[in-house]
Amino acid sequence: MPAKTPVRTIVAPSLLSADFARLKEEVTAIEQASADWLHLDVMDGHFVPNISFGPLVLRALRAHCGLPFDVHLMIAPADPYLAAFAEAGADHISVHAEAGSHLHRSLQAIRALGRKAGVAINPATPALAVAPVLDLVDIVLVMTVNPGFGGQTFLLSQLAKIAALRAMIQETGRPIALVADGGITPAVAGALRAAGTDVLVAGTAVFGTADYAGAIAALREQSPEGTA
Ligand code: DX5
Ligand code: ZN
Image (tube, rainbow, N blue to C red; front, side, top):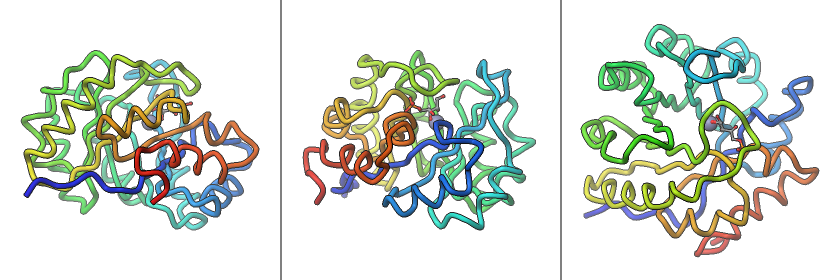
């Protein structure tokens, strides 16, 4: 039996758009605002043209937040740091297909650490790039902007890729979460859900507002199923 798309939209606010001077308060507030996952963007200034934070920040926040830590590694190489992120409190670890020559090995390593394994792809990378590793992943993350910065404009061209990935995931019969990340607002949430997206990552659209709960609800309400 093919896996069904979960009815409820999973919303994963991205910490990148939070107030870095008040991270403890920010993660507490986002949990109270009924976020589903906390998305953590790790950038190395090499794979992407920006630097964010590493495992020490995860470890510091872990005690203050009960949400699953959804770690998006935009670093190359990733393998030398996987254990550090797992030990610091990552529940999910996604690595980019473009970040190295041994994606399969990286995913095996994440699973061996007992964490959910994800593969992320950039806008110019085709859906088929993940086909050979679908048996190893719990998460497929589609970048809907070029990675590196929050606050960019959503790339409509990625919707067709998301629909293709949804079909590929259905064929596996495995419960793989399909994640979209970048430029997501309530205006595009409905189209993303209709294309088969399970998880909406949103930085600016949540942390850039004064009402986190309202912003999360607005993203969920745009799904074809509403808030059910
Ligand atoms: C971009 C990151 C995204 C980003 C999303 O490289 O992977 O998670 O923080 O931020 P917004 O929602 O502002 O595009
Ligand atoms: Zn991200």
